[in-house]
Amino acid sequence: MTRQWSSKYLKHIPMQSSDNLVGFKSGATCEAASIIDRRRRFSLQAALAWFMGGFMPMSGHAQALELLPQYQPEQIVSGTIRLSGHGSFKEDFMGKLVAAWTEGFRRFNPDVQIANHMYGTASAIGALYTDHADIAILGEEISPAAAAAFKRAKHYPALGIEIATGSLDVAFFDYANMIFVHQSNPLSRITIEQADAVFGAEHRRGPRNIRTWGQLGLTGEWARKRIQPYSWKDLDFSLFLQTVILDGSHRWNNDLKEFAHIRRPDGSLYEHGEQILDALAADRFGIAISNIRYANPQVKALAIAPHAGKPYYEATTENLISRNYPLTRIIPAFIDRKPGQPIAPKVREFLRYVLSRNGQLDIVRHTGYLPLSAELLREQLRKLQ
Image 1: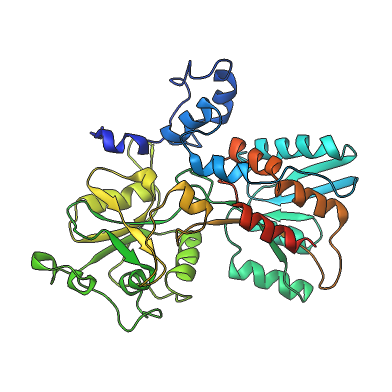
Image 2: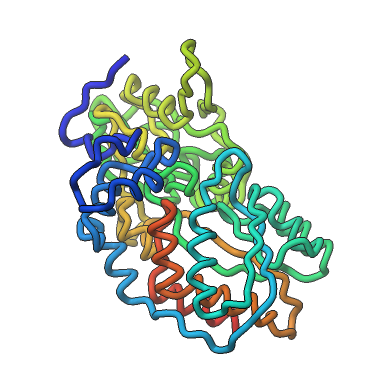
């Protein structure tokens, strides 16, 4: 079934192919075909921004990158740096980034080799504490189980360095979680405390659970209507939401309807996020966690504040990079640094490159991730001292 999209929602249509993106920038078509493919599904807005050069429509990228320092080596290093982490045998969505980092870093340190063993976040921390990797680059925040496993093996925690910001809406690149309601719903914003009370069962952030729209301040026909929540049936997403929304609780609202990827009769993938927002489109009294890549004209995203009395923010590239948006995802690297001991020089220099304008520009050009802000970058660099 073909969706009918208004112009308001055209910017949310996932990019399926680079075939239509010809003539935007001389000489760019062949390179773009290799960067923007149907599996990464960049939004049309992001793809056009890349083609136009300088990231003009995406001011969050431009401003963030302009403020970052160029890489200047503090010492020349040599040897092999072993990377484990986010990636896949089937989908080499980090390969171009690692190749770009390798090329850029070796301009300054030609005697360094980068060994790419990035076959999945699940194996990354294990490779680190068994000395099969020097740097573990995760595709999401570290899980409690992985953090505990490292500490159990080494008797101290792994050192985490944030290296990128999760994407706004790009698959495989940790897109932001967003809270949606039906387009007819008068609600326009919500706090994390309220979201905990709606989606959770223990209301750890507030005095009581919220189960009706009247408890969120709606009146008239909405006041006594029960809220129907929808969300992902996905362990990784659930762990993140349990931390940032439910304050560590694992007890969800018993009314929650969860969705996982399924196959349609024709074999095509019906993604969980699209199922969630299709269900919400048919339910005026629903509320859902999903992502704007799956949006349809019958739903709208809410602005979110960390708690009452604080500013509300929409999910935009600028608000993700600044970390103003409360449900921003973080992309970390972890290293094995024994307390009181220096970081291996080759590892330290490589991470300094990643945390420079050079390395961050590679991230923006070759993945769907967003860069760090200058303030956050300086904070991460201090961890390397």
